[in-house]
Length: 368
Image (cartoon, rainbow, N blue to C red; front, side, top):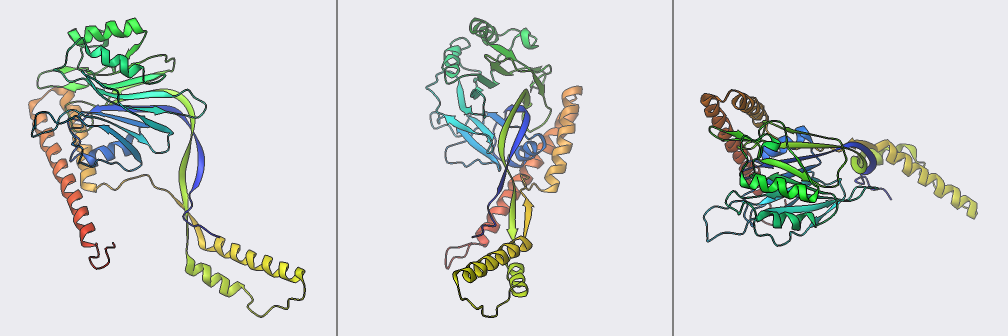
């Protein structure tokens, strides 16, 4: 009769669609860093390049569905490179699009199916620097054909003065030519996205087609990588279903309420009307008891991240911003030290959680 775990759904109206894309240079031992970033910025879709995951390695983030395309192992290489992934909020209607056969780029794609809107085809793309700098557009054509309103974001490893790079590389010139022929637009932030030892350039881009939406795009000096995450925000009004609250019933309170409010003396039942009155009274007592003993609990979307890790991430972000501005090698050394410490604490925290789970496992009946 009563289900205290049933969530209450609410239609929520949003006024922007936020996509973040980032070359992670590997996501292992970065789960706390990524979770903290998602909690702070709450992007609707988070695209990752160079995940460097093997198929047997699990990668999950609370409140997001994860889709990934791992790079096949090459010649029994000891380490895994490349790979792409997409994280999308569970509340957003979508489906995964199988990746077509590609020869020069790596990609993962989804279809975003917002209510009363045409679908958007969102792709996380990585173009390795050693692939052919002109033929890769053949793969781009395949990705554009996956669905309407393509949004292709990621590390193109292409430079051109059109988006603020100091030089025009062959891959950059080919991308400009290709997008002009197809009537597409290249979106780039005004500041560098990738920082080398003595260089800073814009390699992380978005390519869109058939868009007339206002947008903003910025490079954020956050997360642990030589690439900054790029935040792309479209001004777009849409509605989505949110699981925002659930209820909890205190069954002891429920029982005590019934004991105090219910008259348990035998009833005199002489007619069908007496039965109906008795049933109605009993039902009302049950409903009142449930209301009395039940409270609404707001559903939290926050993930637990150790306070020490959170503090270190804040310090790291400030240090990273200073290092990218001042280009001081001493700051870079300090940045490396902090990032190593974050990875170590993250790894230790996850190992502790796994150990506690194993210790809580009941070997006699196989339960937790």
